[in-house]
Image: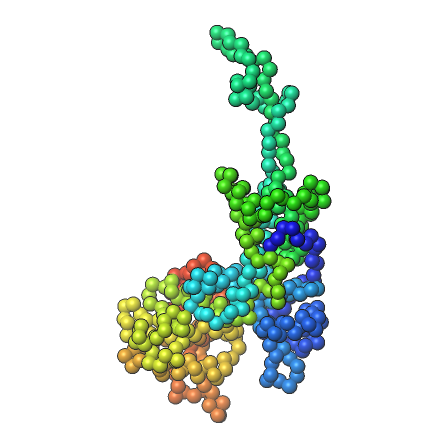
Amino acid sequence: MNNHSIPVSFWDPRIVSVKEGARRTRGDWEEELKASPSEFDVLVECGCLKRNRSVDEDIYEMRFVGLLFLANSCVLSLPKVSHSVIQARSDLSLALAAVMKYRQLFDRGQTPFIEPGDAVSRGKWAKLIELFRALLNWTDLYGLHQTFIDREISREGAISWPETIKKRMALHGDTFTVFDRPIYRRRTPVIGELRSLQAKTIVALAGHFYPVLEALGVNRRDVVSDCRAQIDSGDERRQPADEPTTLLRRFLSGTNLDHEIELSRILLAIYKSDDLSTTKGMRAVGTNSFHVIWQTAVHASLLSAKSASAFLSPGVVSSMRQHTGAVDKSWLRPDHVLISRTNPSQVILADSKWHDHAEEFGSYDIGKQMLYEAATSRSKSVIGNSMISPTDSNSMISCGSACIIDERGSPDMRLPAIQVIGAPWRQILNAFIQGGSEEIGEKLINTSIRS
């Protein structure tokens, strides 16, 4: 980000809310999203919209969760399982926080699932938005940064005793000392380089992201207006002598005040980010593969449980048989294999499904889950085989079972039914962001065990 070419105009788009999984024709999407034909093509090219080839009509499905920045609109695409109008903004913020957490783990090489490259490449916008939010909150709390200098005045100021003792003649009595002309100094605020940089950065980021923060419930327009007034005042128009990163590092080395250190670190993180003016392609925060975020979040909770050793494929282990002896065929491995700590011969198989549990599962998903159990080593006893899907409920629920339907339309009782578990998705994502939850992990395991 270059402070010599920061835009100062506001981007004032229309805020559009849609939901992951929504289906429209091309014309309907262009009208609803206020997207130009070229922007629509980019959305399809990036995988945010995917054509549904199972129907004859020109139907496209929204596959994206997060924020899309178009020329005339900002699209808020909510997770498909968000059914509360009241919680819509907080649900989207939660989903974005989960994407950012996933990106952090990916950068450290700690993500068990490597599939969604888009969840990583589109994460930098989320980082900038969070830094912008932090900068606005800091400025709302402390105001624009002030630098003070001490100036000598003739009267009505604080006496500078060190200078008075050093430079003035003292008259000493038995019990007192008098100085003929004390030196007075007054702390005077001046416009410093950090204040100038702070104001320009806020106005610059407001031109890109402020409408997004308003859509997410953050209202700091008065702060942005104050910064614009500072820039228009005259003194703020001059450019700092040093590059922003040099200035901020120098300031950090010379202050010991916590709030000034916090401000400098926020600004430094912003200016170490990619230049907004050179970002190419679709501007977005989020992912086309939120099911991978869900898989990773569920696994984080399972890892936190003490009652089982959790193994995950394919990201954590290269051969499930080599490490656990649980599965004979390496290509027939569910997302999660749980081995009991007290009885290692007992295993639980589970797949994470980013799927509304109220809707029917396809025969492919059910059949694959049955094959997982059939491929399990004979030395292991499968005490649970389930599909874990998100629910809007606040508690873990057993949603019955799924089974293959025969040609007569009846359940095929020759094959074991697969249990469907509804997991509170908000609690799962919150636990993932915070590092896992032993309580949620234990509930997942207890609900997965066959009765």
